[in-house]
Image (cartoon, rainbow, N blue to C red; front, side):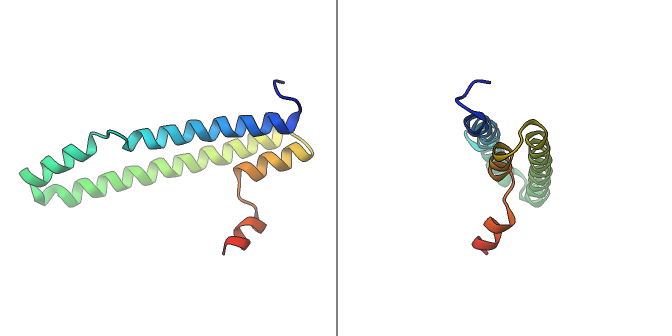
Length: 105
């Protein structure tokens, strides 16, 4: 491919995937139009604030669930695309292993 070996390819590809996902998530909240809309709504009709906040929260949860589905799809693609040590590295970069999660608990 484009790197020195499969492990280099895994590293750069995983980095690019997460950089893209991070830019999509953070761009939604940077210079967001939500803040002025909420501020104006609070001044004009405070009774609607719980409904609008609930809607924003529900949409954020749906977006997070979709991101989780994409994460599982990337893990499946890495499993098909790479083998041996490259597969282990790719899955380690995408899906937290049991040993990692048990150490943090």
